[in-house]
Length: 141
Figure: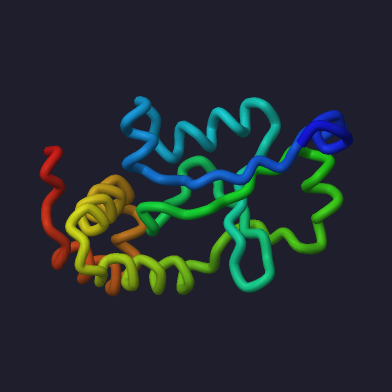
């Protein structure tokens, strides 16, 4: 990564796994990592169906782990035609239902905790209310 990419005005594209369990080992959360990146003028994006979807620091990440890319201003400008402001609610709900249906307890506990932290999102979605009732409580509480 020596050369031009590192020296470009917008800095390199940062590709990383956004993983709540790993972040917790080091005292961070998904939102804290995104806020830090935004403080140095990077924004985080998920890649879905050929598009880059902006992930605001407080946006719900239904997946316990997800590969994302953080881009500085120059790269965002260069890729502007491929960037969307975020997810449609229907897609977010669909992803929550998928991850909430997985058999792994750590995934279910993570999603239960994230939904509990977002009552305004759950309140407007009958599907998320139903999912939240089916998920186990968070053993960390």
